Length: 245
Image (cartoon, rainbow, N blue to C red; front, side, top):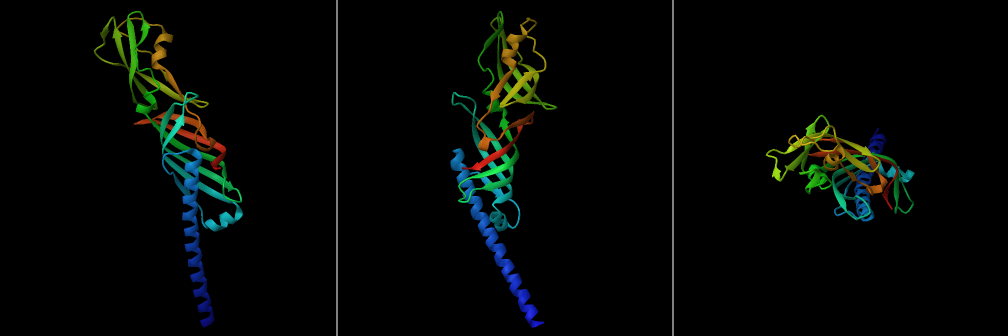
């Protein structure tokens, strides 16, 4: 009985040491992965990297991690060839089946899903903010975006008719959708400019706009988008996503 008791004590101690070693290795790996991702994606700040599953060391021995979560607070995505960027807030991605090279210099996830958000103030930069003629004697410009409820964006327009600014801004509810790498905002109906008729194409040149978003981390891409209280919420997804390297 004494020998059995000693054996049990040894097993418990060794088990505790293994858990400690596993957690220390996990913490180190998460830090290294975060630093590598920051360098690879040229991020302004170090992202959050969380490696799920236990034990970690047996996953490493197998050359693959089951689940890795990445969080980037402030990501600047390019919007085209002109070098312009748009700020994406709280980009979070859940990477599944992450395989890494023997020297740990690169890692690729079999699949990834995630979410991000773009504030209305940021998206507003895409809309026409300068006065533009929509009919003879009528000019208009977008001055605000906000939550219109039921998944719609409210687009607020300031209009001037025959040199006089209308006393109240006009607003339309718009549908937001993803087409490829582009977020598109399309008015469900058109505003009336004080009884002056305007051609639909001219009005839509103000109310409708789009924002291209490419070069997301690791090659993930836009999937879906919907309007929310403080901005648009975006779903992202990808396959063979580069986590590093």
